[in-house]
Image: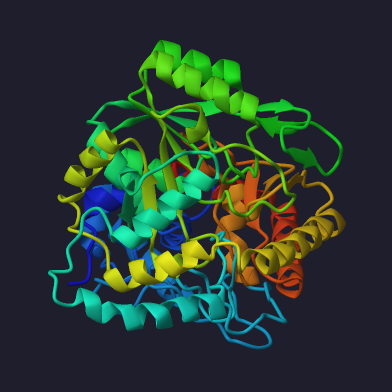
Length: 511
C-alpha cells in the first residue's frame, strides 16, 4: 500500500513556512517541493486533502488549492482523484531546453540519462544530492557469478543468520587483523549496509532521551536515525585551524575536530554514545590524525561513552594518508564498515566490528528489525572483501581527476565560494558567500541539478552558508553541474526578494 501523510504530520514538516514575503500558495508549494526533493516526504505519498490541510494550517482552502495546482504544474504532484494527489519527481526533457518553474529560466545542454544511486533522479537531472559511485562493474559481476555457484550449498538450510555468513565474517575479520586490529569472526556482525548497522547499534545501546554526541556537521542519515530513536543529539562543531588533513584551496584555515570541545561535551553531558566519521568525514572531507583519535578514545572511555566510528569512507584515501583504525586504540570502540562507497551502494552489505559481548547484544537487538541479510549478497561480498584492493586503484585515480576538475571549475566559475581540497572521500564542503544554501537547493531543479541543502547536515537550521558538492561524476558532467550552480546563484543574486522568500522556511522544515 502506498504511504499517505496526515495533515498534522505535514504541518510539522512544513515548519514556519508562511513568511509573508511572497504569495502564500507559492511559499507553501516551494516548501513542499523541497521536502519531496530532500526525501523528507517519500515519493508516491498521498498528501492531505485540500480541506484537511487548510484547516490544519489555518489558511484558506484557496491557498492550498493553488499550491497543489502549482505543484502539479511543476510535476511534483500527480492529478489523482479529487485533491489526494501523490508526490513524484517530474521527468524533464532529455535534450535541448526544458520548460521551467519560473518564466524566463531555461537550461540547455543537459546530460540525458543521468541518475542517482538510491533515489533515481529524473531523466536529464544531474544529481549532486548523493555522494556515491556506480558499481565497480566487472568486479561486482564476477563476485556474483562466483556466489551463484556457491549458493546451492546453502539451500538446504533455513537461510536465516542474524550474525551473517561465517565466510564473510572471517574475511572481514582478517582485514581488520591485517590493519593492526586483531579481530575474530565472532567480533563481526554482517548488516544490510552502514545505515542498518547504525540503527542496530542505537536500538541496542540507547533509549529515548539518551544523549548521543555527534560532529557538527554530520552525516544526515545518521542524524535522522538518532532523531527517529527519540535520542537527543549533542552537536560539537568543528574549529578553524591550519592543516588537519584538508588544505583550503585559498590557503586559509581548514576545519578540524575541536578536541577540547569534544572532551568537554563528554565530561559534562555524559552522552550514552558518540557517532563520529574520522576518515574523510562526510560532509567536510576531514581526516582525523592519530593523536586526536587516541584523545577521542580516552575521553569516551573516561566518560563511559560508547564510541561508534563510521569507517565507510576509509578506503577512499586519495592522497595516501596514513592513519590507524580507531579500534586500534581501544577494544571498546564499535566500528561500522561497508562496501557501499568502495564498490557499490546496491550491494547493501555492511558490518559492525566490536567486542564479542557487544556483538551478541547487537545480534539480539537485530531480531526486532530483521532475521538476517540476503545470502547471495553476502556470498558475493566475501569475494569482494578478499580482493578489496583490486578495483580501488582505478577508482581512486578517477576520483582524483574528478576532484581536481571540480575544484578548478568552482574556482573559475564561483570564485567567491570558499573550497577545501579533501584528502579523500567523495565530496567538497563549500562555504557560500551568503546564507542561500536552501534557496539554491529549491531552485536547482530549474537549472537541471539536484542538491542537498547545507542544513540537511546539521541541527537547528545550521549551515545555510554551506553546500556539499560531490565529485563522483566525470569532469564533463561536473562542468555542466557547476555552470548550472553559477546560473542558479546568478538568479538569486538578481532577485533578492526570491532569496529571502526561499531562505528560511525550508531550512526549518529539514532541520
